[in-house]
Image 1: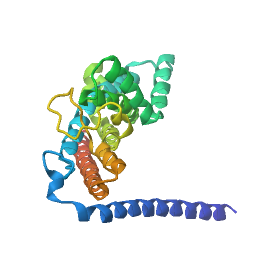
Image 2 (image 1 turned 120 degrees about the horizontal axis):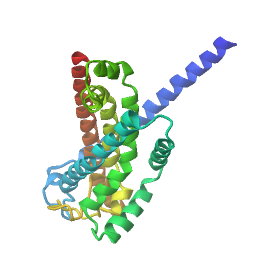
Image 3 (image 1 turned 90 degrees about the horizontal axis):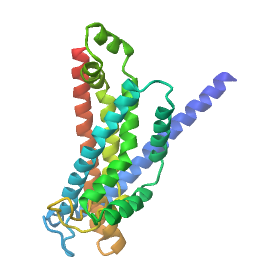
Image 4 (image 1 turned 180 degrees about the vertical axis):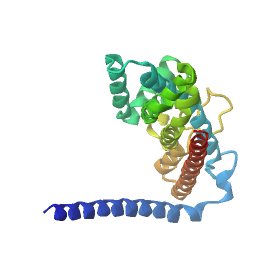
Length: 277
């Protein structure tokens, strides 16, 4: 009976994996087939018009938005994780409340963040539809993800590292930043990679905060249209469907490139840490 149940579970596991890979392959193939034939030089013009519907301003805005959101969220998220793991007392009710709040925020739909950003940053603070409003909204959105990933990475560091550092006379702060944090960097990088993926693929929150102006912003207070919003705008208008598929191909390549680069960095960081240890 036990062997039969194990076989059934094994078959279901392989079937689930096969279905997942098949769906992923179908989506990728569909986007590539529909978009690659329509990738042309006019799509990479610095200025976007109603004729060329260039994606270059959106691509540059996406890069700017990503770096701005990470610049705001990463230090706060990692700092909060360090406090929760290394300094806060275990079993503290405030810590449990913070973790519950972070998990709750992670499950909120992105459009809710967009409405909040529009009401607070765009309207109340009078930033208007701008790169800054979009970056702050995205930073709030990815902050729980980075914090929880960093917290789990810090928890995974063996206590023997801390004890060895204390035994050699190092203080708490030096131990955290010289021993614990470097050892946890691969896990922290994984959280940052997930955050980047969410930023690049976000649409709903940015429509209400960053706007849909297809121009390269020269300052943080100007509107910025990212690649995902650009795809949505083209598809909604219905006049440049082929170009929207081509833009989707570029967005796909950008995400794959970011993930590959981040994975290499995480591997080098992890390898360097292991060698040092």
